[in-house]
Length: 304
Image (cartoon, rainbow, N blue to C red):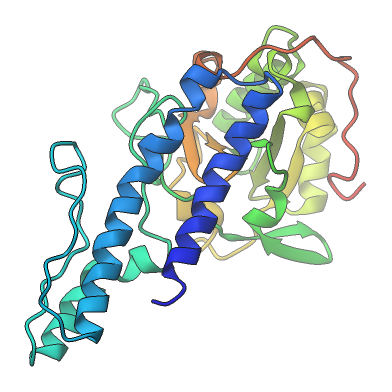
């Protein structure tokens, strides 16, 4: 518990730094993006006070009331506080860590809905992926090349880069048709990809169930030319019950696009065939930039 405040401060920094960076360079709308820091982190600051206050009273054998903030706000019911009764130590510890264990580890820290944590209504009753907008993106293990493996986060780098994780199953059948639509969007000068800075703003990462040699055969075809040019390709080679598609609960026939913020929280998600819905999502808080050369190359991806 001694480093809990430090952990929270690091999360504050991760949440705020990329927002300041984008707004300072006029790449994002300050009136929209700026307030999201308070919207997202105030709730957790409130909970940290209650969690650490509860534990401190246990350590000090104290019955002093725990501080409570924002009593007249939406955060007045913030969880975390566990009342300590002297002499009932095991009962307190069981209740305290049962309620706060995941939060202390930084895993249970969802953010409230706002402009960057948006659930886009899909043309289906089923969500494109199981993890909700506003939660930390799961980090499954993946294959990067025939000779290297790692975790999804290893491919999601860049202090102010917005990541697009595209689940594309086996690149064939129904998912191939919607993947082609996404490839066309990457190539279109009026799509969100080019409107907001192409590879200087976005990091498209395709996750496929095929091996590197199998995927190469499909990516050499003309309908996926933009995928090959602009996307990193990762290979989901784990067993079916523990692979990335299962981790995110992706429909293999529909695929999915998960927008992962620079701080690795999920911003939104759509089915692969609903890529046009991302235009409105990014329009709300990003600022268009001058068009770049459509022949932009990607250095250092796909083993190049």
